[in-house]
Image 1: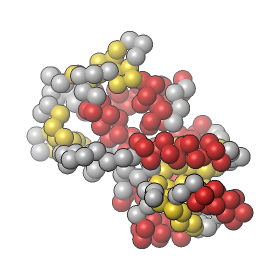
Image 2 (image 1 turned 30 degrees about the vertical axis):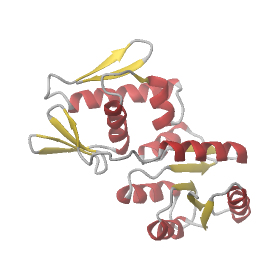
Image 3 (image 1 turned 45 degrees about the vertical axis):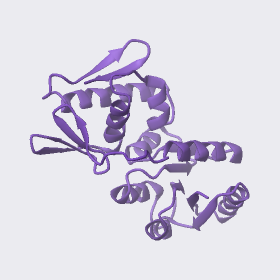
Image 4 (image 1 turned 180 degrees about the horizontal axis):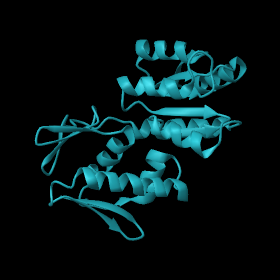
Length: 224
């Protein structure tokens, strides 16, 4: 069964969430603060991390940053009462995959966890290095190579490039990538996506055969 690492400093809430997940068949490892949570992450290699943001010793954003240094694919879902746009954006920029505001429905949490675990299913025999025209893309290390030079990508840049590659020469729907990488297809996130597309076009500019084209009203297409 999938193993969930749950980090929540409110003990009562943590126990309710833990019990609810275990009743539904998940294995849950619980930590009451970020330091304990990171130690458990290094020991257990969970299938998903569900963490509060405001915690003693080590906050959830710093925890996510540490986790992403060791693992770029494990899904991270933030539980928090902080709802300002800047906080949400920071969480995603640090490698978070989803963001659930307190108070929340346990049923909604379960649905989001199942959705993220489904997206995280491994692809059979996926190559370590992807060839994109004149470039070599190491998704796990978030590096894009061209003529021996390496460009270090952010987590979201790497995930977006991987999505475009997986759908190469086909339309990558805008709403799909926004829900997958930003967790919401609202206007603000849409503008952020446009910025990331512009960055990737700049990174790939040395190969004239590569194009990321807009498909009006639908999304983007990586032409190879």
